Amino acid sequence: RKEVEQDPGPFNVPEGATVAFNCTYSNSASQSFFWYRQDCRKEPKLLMSVYSSGNEDGRFTAQLNRASQYISLLIRDSKLSDSATYLCVVNSEEGSGGGADGLTFGKGTHLIIQP
Amino acid sequence: DGGITQSPKYLFRKEGQNVTLSCEQNLNHDAMYWYRQDPGQGLRLIYYSQIVNDFQKGDIAEGYSVSREKKESFPLTVTSAQKNPTAFYLCASSKRTSGSLHTDTQYFGPGTRLTVL
Image 1 (tube, chains in turn red, yellow):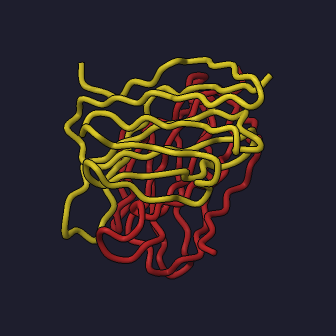
Image 2 (spheres, helix red, strand yellow):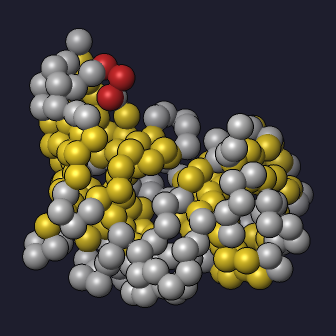
């Protein structure tokens, strides 16, 4: 079975600090990777897609390590509003059209930014 | 505004009743999905549809049914056969770029919280 593993946390981090967490995936054929943010009792919202070369969006940086099969999310200068659960999402079907895009969701990492 | 809507936001059901959850999107997306989320768990796929009048079972389809008569709509019925229906139900849609090795981003509706009394 294709797995996506995340440390559930919670990560308690002081405001302004840098925090990073990883997500490991088991399917070496995975091609698409995403980080979603989910606030309590709300729907997941796309934070960023993860590209092979890594990508940055403001204070957020995502990186992919195919050799070790993990993706990472780095948050710099953390804000109170960054407190949420961060879901790692990986596609687990090779090629197009297979399955429901074969997305597998991690259980999420709970981040708490403290004032 | 373009987006995905789900209704109702909260739903209470008595045991033995069927209930239908609504999902509508005006993003012109081809593919739509239903997930359930239980506390402390990842999302699990119930059903998905890549095109109108076609749908496929996901990982936990037992006790659920769907229809896809219109591109914009993908209602989910939770039947009395579903033994543990209390959960947070999320509908999503994606563009479905054909011929791509990459998965299109899925966008979620606000969810329906179903409680069985």
